[in-house]
Length: 315
Image (cartoon, rainbow, N blue to C red; front, side, top):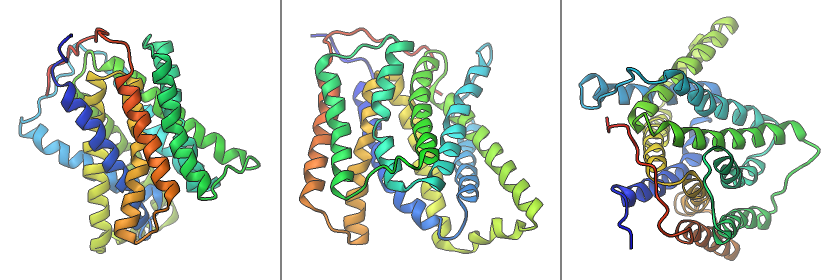
């Protein structure tokens, strides 16, 4: 039996933590949007995440080294996520429902498998493919039983949301490749910095042109909004970016992507415990299918597959 690569168990833990945090993010996003627009929320979200990560960077606790590396590839990565992903998702949800977004996002692992095969030459066994489909099926089962469906007459929203899923899959594949020369911290810091600059510029420009600059900062008078922004910025953006990038540095992109469906289970649990929402039998059945699919994807692969080690030193 081949020994597990160093950090593999922690990588799986990061993938699980990532899904848990994202699962709660829907609740905090809903809270924050009661006080500000989606674009303003993104501005504060990335301002918080970039500011917090800048502290250990400036203090020398996290060392970043971009010298001699192909920095333009990081710019391309940041263009995919978070810029393109959040832009497509935000405009997509203006034309479609959140349920439609959840249904389409469930297909991200399948898109990731396809792109990982094309660009990373990652292969999956038949049992792994079936496990991924089982996990996706669990998410779809929950939404269908809730009465959710896709309105195919609303093609604008559907196309934008599908493109956001494709962008997320592309991010996972490109990040997996770049993690051979960049550390997770180096990738994350550039992502957050570019997103902060972009969304701040767009939001400030829009409010200045409309003469509503005071509305940009007015939500900061609410402690509830600040709490939600800190969760979304620090945990749901900074921590998830670091944990996702670390997991991708140790595990195949196709395996990491399927963990995203666990966030559906967390969202159900959050709604039940924090909002008093009912949990039905179909929630339990769908959750069991999701968990079985995640376990199968990560345990039913080929044995003894040699992983390409990450060449970047930890920051």
